[in-house]
Image 1 (cartoon, rainbow, N blue to C red):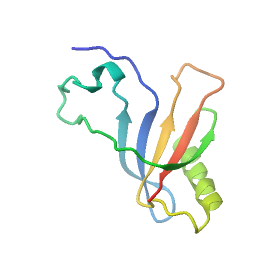
Image 2 (tube, one colour):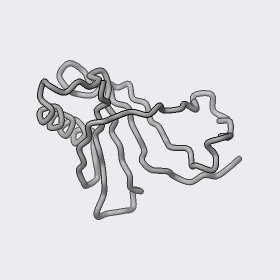
Image 3 (tube, rainbow, N blue to C red):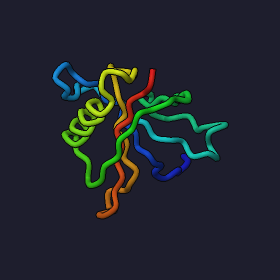
Length: 117
């Protein structure tokens, strides 16, 4: 019963397949606004879970435009290539993040995050 509005970023946990494409399994995460974090409202839909994301160090790349799955896959591949074999990061998932509302046509910000091990 509490309206919180949209928060940023909208974070999608992507699980890459062997060929770099994304599996159909994804997890969408929304940030709970600061004023609700100490005592978040209970979801009325049992498929919605409240989780606390622990602090992490990430490797990131940023790009613009209206991001599609293919864009996230391509930028993840570019980030992987830029990091080479020396960087240790989680290979079983990565985060696809969007920061802008759908009606913002210019200056859009999207990011791919790899979590450092």
